[in-house]
Length: 292
Image 1 (cartoon, rainbow, N blue to C red):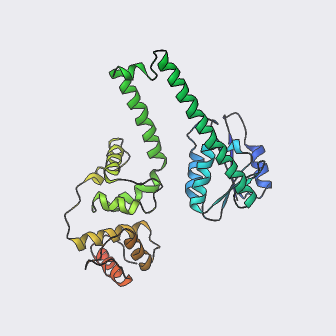
Image 2: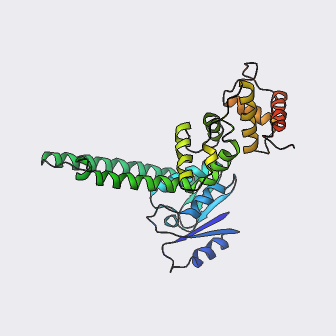
């Protein structure tokens, strides 16, 4: 059981929540100072990234975790994807029990109804405004004012960069291991085996280029991948997979190559551990992998 305590300001203390979480059996309690409406919660983001299957995220009350019903359901969905559970001490939600899952389904139905009502009110408001000759939206954007457009682009850019930085340690190490020896497409195929949001080669290249411009990544990552024969590409691809998950067995690497629909050197679709071993040894000889 992992406890999460949050207060809104630096002047408030998390001690009451921490005491209650420890009394409930949480050996680890993580505390965060963040506004209830704020989106930046690095402690919570790290917790969701590192939590393991079978563990349970525990809070004192729901309002200590989520800023909205939608946010709560998103957090619980991420926990379920990891095989973890969620429990609120003061609310009837414990995803490890049937009763708790029922309460969660009720919350989901309420959230869906809330979204439908908001959408309907918005449409009604727009219809009424148009009937009176008013057009919604930002006047500067409608007029294509350069200053307004720059402001919107700067805001979107800042939000995008914050999101990239928050998840940096989940994907950049693998990019560093594979680039520039391997093409962007192969890097993306390995990344997308575990990425919550799928990458594209162009999006990854653009993101790394931005990180290089900000001084957060090495310019060498943007270098051109060397031309290679088909079997050399497989050697580099297997080197990237093995480097990304050093504990994987030859059978697991073979299964991953099949899931990626990667053809064997002879053009087949079935990979055998012996084929993986052969290519892995070549990767070691080329210096792409360390000897076991």
